[in-house]
Amino acid sequence: MVKIFPFIFILLWSSAFITTKPIIDYSEPFSALSFRFGIVALGFFLFSLYSKQKILVKKKYFFESFFSGVLFHGFYLGGVFFSISVGMPTSIAALIVTLQPILTNALSGPILKEKVTLKQWIGVLLGFIGAALVLGFDIGKEIPVNGFIATIIALLAITFSTIWQKKLSNNLPLSVSNMNQAFGGCIFHLFIILIFVDPYINFSKNFLIAMSHQIFLVSFGAFTILMYLIKKNSASKTVSIFFLIPSTSAFMAWLFLGEKLNSLDLAGFLIASMGVYIATRD
Image (cartoon, rainbow, N blue to C red; front, side, top):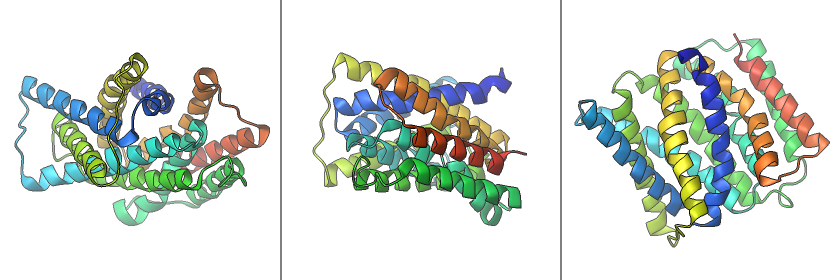
């Protein structure tokens, strides 16, 4: 069962980009995310009680996992949701943030003392060439500038969150760590709402279906699998599975959202995926 976890993760994580669109059609992005992670934090709290895990932990461990949640559930998902809400195509948002593996490999050397080889740097170069082909000259035209900036912030956030989580992954039980991270994400989005935006959620049927998918299949399912894989493997080995997500998300966006990709976009996706694969394979 454990061997198929990466494949389950790929399908669930890729599907999250598809259900983001229905959510932001019926809500303000940060309001939706604060609602989501409030429920997720409660869910992991109840599970931790049921499994008799120690919830009250040292302040150091609490704030470490809380900060990880701010990075992952806050800056990363906030950036993705916001970018799609202002018109960033779902498949391109998925491609940009899924360049995370090549950044993780580049940074895992100096931070985690993992060896970074010439092969990995070749993969980094191919990955960015592929991204450049997909982005082309569309920034400011088909691709909104603020959406592009938001996805870059999301990319940096998920990269540093993965590295940070690897350094902390043995400090807390998985359910307690996930609870603290969800709480951190909820607080982050509540702060954004209080300072910058007017909260709005229309609890329509489409919103509830899409939000249920993201809560149960993505936050409880895919994210838990990711944290488990980070705990059991090196950071560079774990993120190698991400190279399949852009093409999977693009296919899902074509199938369910009717998004179109031209031949240059497809070539960019292929080159970027090859680059990430080369950079992260053993």
